[in-house]
Length: 466
Image (cartoon, rainbow, N blue to C red; front, top):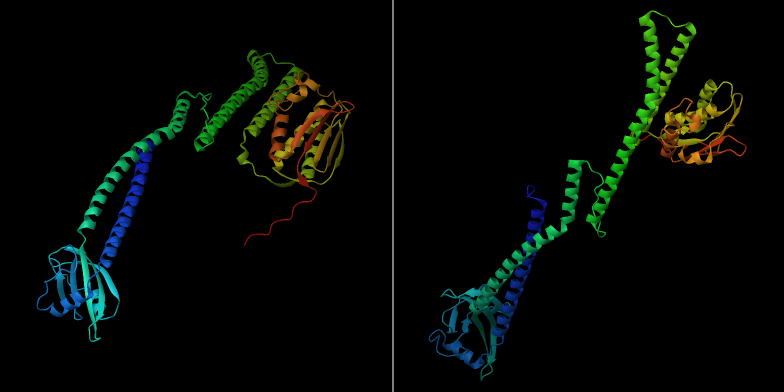
């Protein structure tokens, strides 16, 4: 079954289910009809009225002259049952052996008996046995056990006819179920066929612009909508990947070009035997070192952005200690800037190295754009970290782009950096459930605000599980 196509399996299952249901209904109909016909036959046997005097008279003469009168119509069989089980057939074509129920009635152990039996000529009969009681002229009570029987052939004939009709109904039902199942399979699986064709088209052409029409609110519609959402997400991811590769290539080209130029100058100096002046050589080596540092920082930023979210482990970390560590690094990078700090305890859930990198990036921007001798205000209160510098600030039209990858304002293109720092900050903060914003400070400069949910005290440690 598993090797068959889904449409064939659905057709077979539908036809099988309908066939079983029709067969069970037909069987129930046949059984109910059989019981009704037998009950009617039993009622007709119980309704037979025999002349009591004539029955007693036959009972006296039965052993010598058993068949010598008509107590009932010819299609009935009337028998007298002795207490020892002996049978005297008064009317009927063939004797019917007495059953245990007949003997129980004759022995006064039960009032009556209704059962099926086979006559000596092989005909199946329906038998009702009961006692007949009457008093003679002298007041003596006489009790005789009488069996009235009728052939089951008329019931069996009706049941056989009904069985043939029901078999025909089952055959028609199975054929109709197969046809309906095939139609249902084709109609119901048409959206699945469309989805399959779309997937095959994408696999063949890598065209992620294919969309499947969504009709209704059923599971197939939900599947189609989910597929469309998946293709949109894949197309967007591919576009972002291509944009990232293009931007990374553009950003890598500048330091690599500068490195190649400087190395070619050094190589030409060595090849021609004309040594560069010591000052120029030191400047070239310093430029090479700076370009190597810029390349290393760019590669590190790219690696940070390419890390999947599933690879990150979040834990409770002290944001205030992370901020203190980032401040120490900022002091080394901007020794001539004054850092005014007010850091209060705050615990958040995140990844400590990533959060430290995010805070360092904010402080690096403040150091980079602050004038020499300028002040940088850093404050952490109630889960809100603010970094305020007194630099030139960011124009209002550039603020919506500051968190985009590789975006750099025209005034900052001459400064070192890759344009990925703030993008890394936003991604890290969002992974910890927070947000970050940049805005113009009231009296000039830039105000960066980082908000993270947490608490001023660490949560209690969970008891170890035994």
